[in-house]
Length: 141
Image 1 (cartoon, one colour):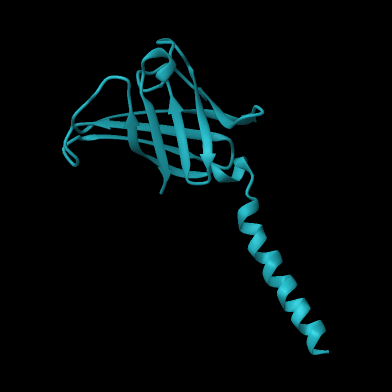
Image 2 (cartoon, helix red, strand yellow):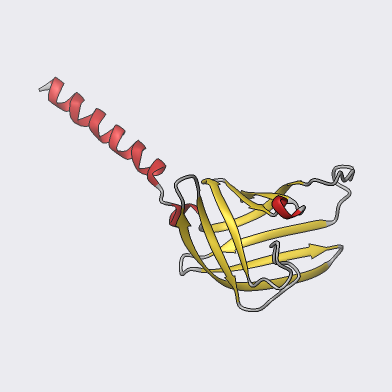
């Protein structure tokens, strides 16, 4: 009887611990994301804490999002819808903005879409380095 009880307890613990790691990309992206790092092909030397620059995304469960950028107290916001897609190598969200905006990070200046790579459940990347733009890294908050 003790063995059966022990097996049931162990099975329950293993089953519950596996649930949290099985989030799909649709579930991983939900929430608020803030810019934590910018990597660029052009060197920029800004002492830590002195840049007054903030970028964030808010992804909602209904497939909508909002992107916010604040530079020295001037805030810009743009919103739209997103879909999750994948290739053999990566999972990404394709963002479709409701209007064009200067805060859309794309190699095309008139773009109304942006691709966000879902690296893990706590890291997103927006990469425009192929066209000499920055690679921005976001963390879930």
